[in-house]
Amino acid sequence: MRIAPKAIQTFRDDFTYSNSPGAIARFPFPFPEDEYRYSVNIEPHLTPGPEGSVYEHLFDIDEHYLSEMAERNLVLQENPKRCLAMPHMDLACWDMIERVMVAFATDYPEYFALTREGNHWIWENKLLNQRDEFTFGDSSTLPLPPMEYIGRQVQGDFALLDQREGDLFMDAGIVTCPADWSLAFDAGMSFSEWHGPVPLAHEMGVFDRALKYLVAIPVGRPVRRLNWTLTINARMDTSPETYPAWGMDRASVTPDNVGEKVYLRVELQVLDRMPRSNALMFSIRTYLISMQDLVTRPDWAKRLHRVMKTLPPELVEYKGLSRFHPTLVQWLAQFDPAN
Image (cartoon, rainbow, N blue to C red):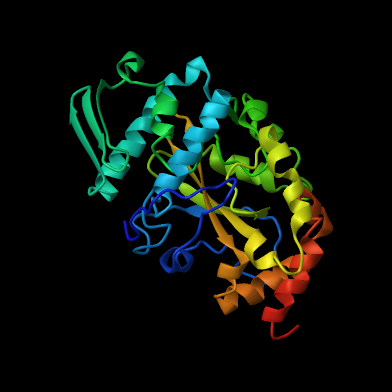
């Protein structure tokens, strides 16, 4: 780990979350061009990636680890149904436990350790002061159900997609920091069903092509893509279940507070085939950066202005940007020399 975890900060109420200069430098800026359009922007998730980048390892752990684990605990206390696994997904949950533990112990040995003697496993998470001995495959030997147990120890949201009849179904997951979607609502849906609200992409055939690609992913060949939206305040949990807590934030943006209020929210999405269950593990690792931090990179500031200025109205509406989009575009214009 190139950036050690820092003390717990908050993603609600007083919003003490902040990025260090190192975190800003490694932020996954998602725009390779001056215009944004939906595409099948999937590429191999080859590891190790560039040293210190968010792509270095299969799972990225950074300075916000303790903060995100604390936020996850709060969300699950408020709504335990934000974690679920259908009975037929038990093997996939154990697949995920193995994938996370082996990767963590290998990539971050200063913080995690795994000892395996047959099905007898010993797991140490030094960041959370946790040590557990259990029998692999036996849920009764864990302190929590398998999905919740491992999901409380890794940054980002996770869905386990069951593959059958040439389609993918969202049949398990732990989702506590979603960008305006609900695991409880999407649970059991097929790939096309949970992507139903996305405008333009269906007409372009993006999801048909993506599904054909995803069902063919083999074991040991994970792939990744970046997704993005904008959010107000450093709030991780923007789920429909908590809309009353954040919905009106969109009306609070003014020309004077854009820099501190508006955040670019980027998801590093990785899909990885599980060896025992044949499920796809879908990880959604979220990164937040305020506009005032983002514009410390002049190239990012200039490009974001051009992307926002040319964003199709359908996407402005779909991503929930309508109330503050004109204000943001006007504010970003000062950082674009060609404006």
